[in-house]
Length: 141
Image (cartoon, rainbow, N blue to C red; front, side):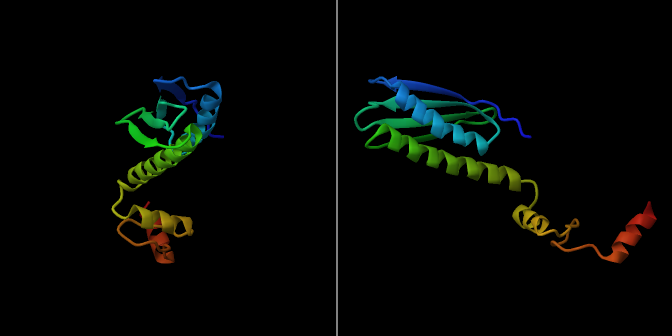
């Protein structure tokens, strides 16, 4: 089983107080971000005028690298948090895909072939090994 580490969530209110109910809603939504990235260290929620037309900013600090920032203004705090979580989710997915595919020139195609149950040899497209190749490989040992 995969062990999930807790992500620290900090709430900061500018010109207004963020209530316990707002914090609970935001924490519930933000906790879902941990499944997209295992390197999340801390998330800051900065709300300016939290009760009327809030401008909310999510700052996601990673264990390595620059933080991801999403900022938006909405009609309510909860609607703005929902929107920002979606924005950060897109950023996390994009970054994770970049990290997965940076090692091989055609990383997505290789993984797609592996999922289909085909074996991938170096310098080839996704295809199965022939009987002759298997015999030749075992004879070399």
